Length: 367
Image 1: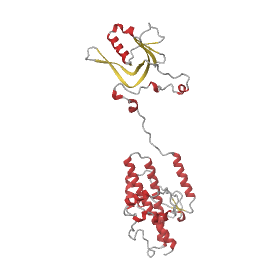
Image 2: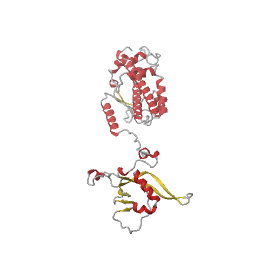
Image 3: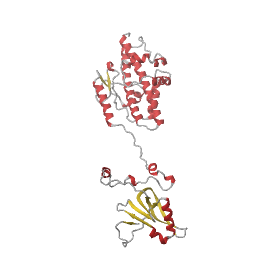
Image 4: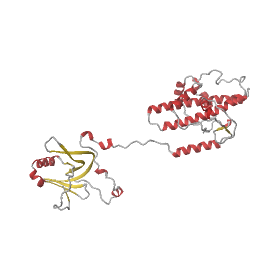
């Protein structure tokens, strides 16, 4: 092998090996010439251009265009003298492909040529296959691109924060609460200790006239990193106090009905007439069937305040659960989180139904 323009008397280069791929007939002639080594120099010649990617190969009267490509695998070359001991001589990583027809080339002044990075190998010089049949398309199968994890975009978070701030500004009244760290377990069970202190660093609740707004509690007792096991256990404990005895049948029915993303006071007329109420069975009188003879106005108002905090906590937990579901790729874990989210939604509907009934009792004035 020699380059064009190099003097034949110059010293030979160090040994470099590559794979030569020829058409069927020239390959047969070259094989015969190798066995007859005396005539190989006159019958076979290789000429490589200055770009080290193109050249010409001559076998007898066959003159073929050649192209040097990079292999996706490395082949070790071994030599032996006695067919017992083998010696490694080179690592083969390139192949010279010879074709009788002309290889289409790209014009040097074309815009595509100018956009290419000179430090990277052109894709047309990257051979996609290996040497053996199992290595077919090995470049795509072995060096395929990895999937990138989908993250929550920052503009979406900023948009949600602005929506929450606007809902707080539209509230008619704001009530500040102080929650002690010692009462964290009691808060998870639905009961809290309220102190009437005007401290602005704690959560906010809207007034009764705007009870279904977008207020969300941002108390320090709520951990942003939700534990799956604790969340599952908490939701199961809360589901025991719900007012629907057959939650599975109710959820199957609610999936076929209209899904609400925001709550308003006009929605509860539709809930009372929806098929969900067909599955409703009244619990014991101590839970939701309030009697005007046993309840006073102060007890109903205190219960409404507790319901406000419980609903705010449920909304915040449901929002955290929805964010975690969007980032999950495991189908089994995604289904588990979806079940927890369904239970939180059902529990929220129960709390709002109880709140609605207490407000109706206060409006009727039968105390």
